[in-house]
Length: 268
Image 1 (cartoon, one colour):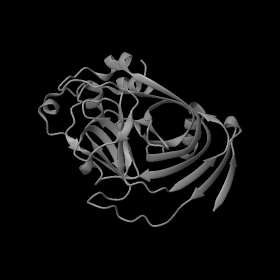
Image 2 (cartoon, rainbow, N blue to C red):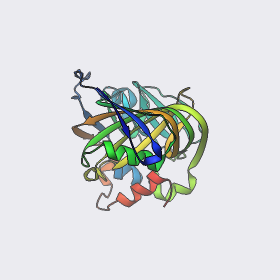
Image 3 (spheres, helix red, strand yellow):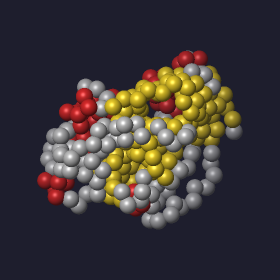
Image 4 (cartoon, one colour):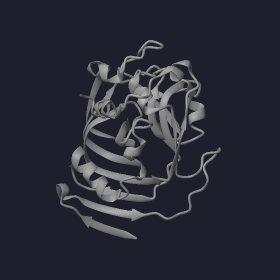
């Protein structure tokens, strides 16, 4: 079924396609429509940067997602079953299975809905549109956006030393920013509900990967020209709790929801 929707935001023309095909059971022990999380979001924001979970094992639980590298030095994207790191220099490359992540979220992506936007749209209008089609405010959604972007601004954090627990909000002035014009590529991300804050990261969260797989980073700003949006609604999630001394001693009593939002925006 194909439906054309006319919206007031940026005079968008959107084509929506529903897909109802059977979703096969993913490999391994991960159920369909499941978000698998390594680490705890508030822990990463508060300084738990040391990697403990290998990428090879992470890929057994999902072929799509994002996260943080061991001792930071950038951002992670999981796309089409491969894991890419964008370092604070901007260098982007596929990582080895034996390397480690401190925090990541993945799922086996299978689109339930698909939309095409054929006109220019900025970040605020894009999120407004997504809100209009992701109608369950307490739902878990994996979101893949691909196509042409007239402008992108991304960031990556620098590396830290082992067991350095400086909170990410205290490192905002150390971020490295990257700007791209007329770029082709993919946004890999999620919209998660408020009840997942601190355990995970609520709201919208996207990382970029260029079509050439040589550039990326956490999305700070975006303006798209012609994009396809694919939505995968999830219905469960789990957390792989770190078995490390640093995690066992970490103070989770502090509510870091505002710190998480600052880190997501790239500014206080």
